[in-house]
Length: 148
Image (tube, rainbow, N blue to C red; front, side, top):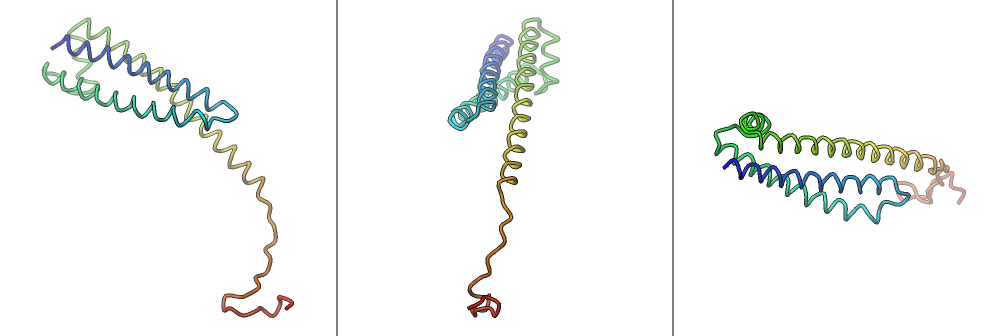
């Protein structure tokens, strides 16, 4: 069973590294002049990898339970302290996840800055044009000040 957990950790590490690579592509797209052509494929790949990661996390938790450990972080810490192979893979996975988290946080900031810039550009482009008086009022009649 420990071999299965090690194998899952290796697979999870590969998936996190793939996710981090997609996040790096996202960073490049977000800093491009026109990211719209690239972003849909990136979002699709991210969504696919999130599904893979969720499946692997569930498998890891099930394997921890079979070994008598609790699910999640605490169970992995206990399993890692009991087996050096698990500890090695767990540390690699944590480092990869930290890298992906940093890139993802950076991308979130890039998105926020781009949205802020777009909002300011829209505000600057909106001209306060005086409204033309309506030909008809709310009651369907021609207002006295319309000049008709």
